[in-house]
Structure formats: C-alpha cells, structure tokens
Amino acid sequence: MSTRLVVAAIVLAALPPALAAPGGQVVRVEHYDPSTTPARGPTNALVTVELFFAPSVTGATRLPAYRQLEALQQRHPARVRIIYRIVQRGANPPGPQLPTLALEAYAQGKFFEFIGAIHAQRTSMTRDQMLELGKKVGLDPQRAERAIIDDRYHDVIDANERRLERLRGTTSPMVFFNSRPARTSLTSMSEADYEAAYLDAYDRARDMLDKGIDRHDLLEAFDAGVMQATQPLVITAGPTDDELETESSDHPLAEPPLALDGLPSFGKPDALAPVPIVVLCRPNDASCNQTMRVLNRVHHTYRGEIRLVWAPWFEVAREDAAELTMLGDAALCAERIGSSPDDLDASPGWQWVSEAYTQMARAHGRRITPDKLIDSVSAKQQIDSKQLSACRARLASATLDWIAAARQSGVTSSPSVVIGGRIYPGLNDPTTIQQLVEAELAPGVLGRCATTGC
View: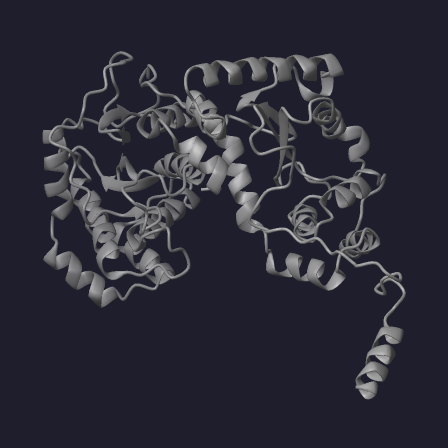
C-alpha cells in the first residue's frame, strides 16, 4: 500500500503546474458533442436567433452583430436563444481552417474564448499562429491541428451553408430571428433595431402558441412559413431549339409521366423518395452544361431531398439527328456499363454527359465528330470502348424511342426542365427553380434541417 502511495505522489509531482489541481479542488474539462451547434440560451426560448458567420481576424470591427446579439440575449435570457452557425463564406483568412478551429474549440468547450481571441486580432494569421492562439485559450494543439488535417467539420460547415441558402441567405454574416432575416443590414443595425427585431419575433412566437404550436416546434413552424408553398408564376424565358413565338406562363403536366428508369442522374442513391428534377437537353448542346450547373447548386441546397435526371431530347427531323442519336445512345450505355467511384452522387451516365458538354464547350464552336467525342469521353471516364460499342448496338435508337415517348407526354422543345411533373421550356433561373422545388417539398424540409442539419 505504501509503495502505491509513493508512486502516486511521484506521478502527481511530475504533472506540469497547469495540469495539477490546487489542493482540495477538482479540475473540470468541458467537452461538447461536435455534432451539436454552439448556442446561448434555453432550448425552449420563444425567439431563436441564428447568426451565420465566419470567424475572422479584425472581427471586432467587421462583426458587431456578434456582440450586439450577445447583449440582446443577456437582456432577455429566458426568451432568446442564439445559435451560432459557422460557415466558410467570408472567412478571413479565406478557407476552412479558421471555421474548423472554431468548431473544434466548441468541441473542447472553448468556443466563446476562441472567437473572442480571434476577433481581437488586427492582422492576418498563419495556420501556426491560429493554432498558437488556440493553445493560449486552452485548446489541445494536437487535436486542433488534427481537426484541420482531417477537415473534421466539413459536413457541419456544409450543412450550415445549405441552411443559409434554404433561408434565402446570400452572404455572411447574416442574422435571422425566428427564420426571418433582419429588416436592416447588419452594418447599419443599432441596439434599437435588434430590440425591434426581437420584439417582432417574440410576437410571432406568441401567435404560434395561440394557434396550438408547441414551443419546442416553433422553429420548424417558422421554417415552414419560409418555404414557397405554392407554385410561383413562371414566364418562359431563355433560348430553346424550338423558339417560342411568345412568352408563356402555361406549363402543362407531363402526361403520362416521363419514364426515368435507366437515365443518367445525380443525387444520393439511398435517398428516400427524392423529388426528381429532369433536364431535357440536346446531346451536343454545350450550353446545357450551364443549366446542369444551376441544377447542381440547387441540389446542394436540397441534398437528399431531390434527384437530378438528364434525358436526351431534340427534334428528330434535324439534319444531324443521326449524330445526336449516337451521342444519346452512348450516354444511356455509359449509365448501364460505367462506374463512378469518385463521386457516389453522380451516376456514370451523369458524369459522361457532364464530361461531353465540357469537352464541347472547350472546343469553342469547333465541330467534334460524334465518334471522336465518344472515344475521348470514354477514355476520360475509363469506359471500355468494346463494351460501349456492344451496348450501343443492343440499344440502337433507344434515344429516339425515349424522345417519342417524351413527345407523347407533352415535351416540345430543348432545353426544358421538368419539376413537379410540369414542363418548363428554357428554364435556367436559379431563384425560380428553387421556388419550384420548395413548392414540391413544402412543408417541413427547413424545419428538419434546422434540427438534423440535413
């Protein structure tokens, strides 16, 4: 027994002063679940304030909202909860390092100390200097550095970015009171403006309670109000192969519904019943790449809730219809025989089509023969040319068959986008597309993402 006591005494004596507890005291080290979000205030508060921001040096002057909201919560401690949603846009220095360190500081129980220290800086900082600053406020430097190397909080930051986009936010910092943005720009907001925004949010919360909404469901209810619950008026605009004589707001349902099995797609393969968004494009129309990029951004915002689908469409009476059929059949075959190990969201056919459009865009209008384009894309996508040729022989004119069925469903021009079963020729405006998607998803997506991060 005495030997054990001697060993224990030696171990305690060897501890550095910072780690040795004063006599009669217990050292308490706080750690938080990294999947949760930094916050101040009770979870059942009637007013939820969400501050989307990127930690930045010189933030004491660039981010007054941080201190103003802190003061607001102190004035109304039982009624206000602040959620700090760390994003990357607007970070200074640019990049994920500082947002990652902020979230690691939260996991180690030092979030507010770290943010305060960062905002007190006046000059740009290197990675080593950021780590040293974290060490000064009590962060484990090894864990902090490992978090940067592993990009440990990528998914958390990405989820915050998507929520900001869902709330129609475009920049950071940005503040929302019960899912509604402040009416005044942050750079111009005074203490009275913050108080007015709080009172408006508080009154809206009381109205929700009067309607029977449980206080724990308030944020989801406010989110549902943000969603576009009805179809927006869409005026057809944008070039199509078959130019419309006049603008139109009549967008018929595809009837019968388009058959989407076997078509190139982009979206989580294990998502439950995602809403399909179909882009119908001529296989050699490089401008379709822009429409696909727009849809990719919308998919990022509603990841797991929607699925993008590409389908070939062109006027079969065109002089180059035979060449377009070759390219369409090649894309359909790539979907069948290809693989996409580098991007599990993008099907082989989707990657094929994206690469084909990219190569055509790089040609700057110079014609690429179908055979040459197919060979080049096959090599880039590592698709066996013999297998592709055999598949094309089996599926000969499958593109024409699909177009004939699509025409029966009401498709008349390319490019067109189909959302909620309705056909929108020439649609490529991201705001309109987001509103149409919200009309299909409403209600409830925003609320689920507020609590689960989607």
